[in-house]
Amino acid sequence: MIAQVAHRVPRHSRRAQTVKIPGWLVDHVVLDPQQMMTTDVQHDAAYLGGQPFDAAKVPKVAFGPDKIITRRAAQEVKPGVVSIFGFGAWSDTPLVMAEEGAFDNGGIDNYAFTTEHGPFGGLVMSNWQFSANRHPEGLLDGLTQFDFIDGGNCEFAALAFAQFDTQGNVNVRKFGTFNPGAGGFIDIAHNARELVFTGTLTTAGLQIDAGKQGLKVRNEGKVRKFVREVEQITYPVRKGVVERGQRAKLITERAVFEVTADGLILTEVARGVDIKRDVLEQMEFAPTKIVEPTPLMKDELFLD
Image 1 (cartoon, rainbow, N blue to C red):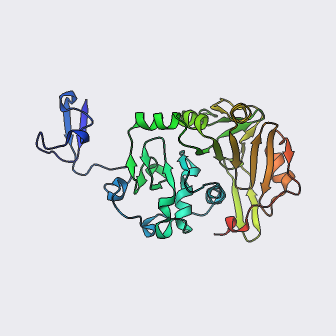
Image 2: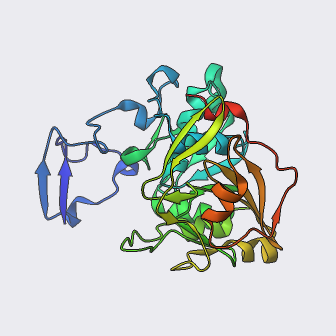
Image 3: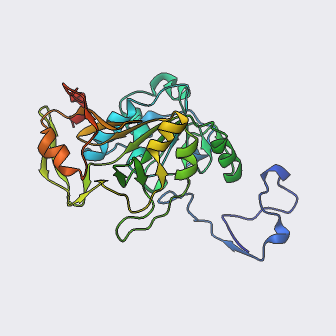
């Protein structure tokens, strides 16, 4: 076992509760005073908690399809409910909420955000800082966190999707030449009561224009994500809805869907989007139902 550390301390100077690996198990020690705390961050005390939340230090999320999606997804996030976030566009949601003032004047304390890695409370970070929360109230080890997840304590789960099929199955594990694995996705999805999956309707080259007119697809993605059959079933969403009473939605940049016992329902669409051309013709299967007249997604979602 090789341990990399930032500095050495005298033996017997640490409280036993802080020692995670007994020294007798360590074969070699690498001393690196400049080691990184997390990706691109050498040291930031806010990741360890014990400091007041400062919205001014929250990074802004660049405008684009992902920000539109996370703005709409933020409408599903409720205070007072333990909410667990997965890697991908979803992890931008707390940042967007902070940017739009949801956490001002102590508002961050009304939300309980976590990830499978164990930070509890505070602000979920995105990109390669994901898994480390700024201003956490607690840091749980992995085994404890999965006991917490598997016990059904994360009622609301916010996850990404790569494929969704006609049988109501979702895939994030293996698609095309990519094989990123499932991580904690299966445990999280199975044990939550409410699920929201986010992602663009198509991918690989998608370009959009957005503004007061709503959304216009400038260049359609080459790859469809609503497919007849997923390449790998990571979680059977519709089965969870039918057999265990879960609630599930899929949110894209141009349309919102609900998963029901009868199938997939189109419940919202962006202003400026032609349902037939921009939604139905970009899916390999048709929704079971389209709510008519189809409600529009809120206009402010599309403003930079």
